[in-house]
Length: 285
Image (cartoon, rainbow, N blue to C red; front, side):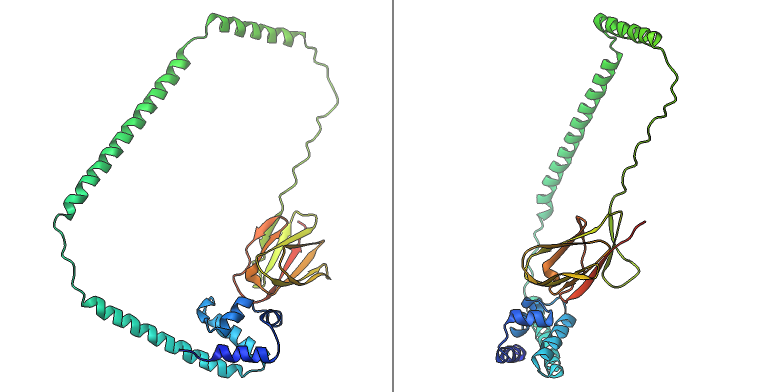
């Protein structure tokens, strides 16, 4: 069954002379989801609500009746659900009438022998472990009880006498110098997501500046503002990076294609196919 939604979207896009890549930049919807809409492969979306949102936005930008397409989408999904239920019921009836296989009375006998072998192997393993443990304990006791040989005794006596003589020969002179204080270690840099807001906001502490690295697995439109100045804007396929003194703002057009490291620490980004803006703030303790 086809709802003719995909063909209508594709015809409207081609009539405007636009490619899927150009529509991705206009809608901020990843190319694979636009292609899924045109091919009516709605199962590729994370959920039905995501498919509806993408369809409404795509249709609106193409100048189509978005509400009509949403209504047809709902009818299509409802019909697909009914077909799935009918298929399951038919399979259930077929399975109900299948003859049951006769149980074999000797199944317990076949399992009995392997279980006995498992028990024997476990007992043997325990005995081996106990043997080696006892052997180690006896070896340690014998070594601790053995007195040192004569050469070792003489060496220990000479060493003790030498230390006593050295202590007697040393002249301790008072000094007014105080030991230098060791410099404390710098606290580690921390990167945490701000729990006090629903927006995507990361807080960095114990750092002298901000460093952001974007690792890309697919094409993505990106705009980066560093301390209020635009430092990067466009569609990129390779990794990008930027620095700032106090604050950074990053707009992502294709979030599933991006991984983010802040001050060399990887952070968790929201699992969403839609474009959004994240901010990074440096806070001094």
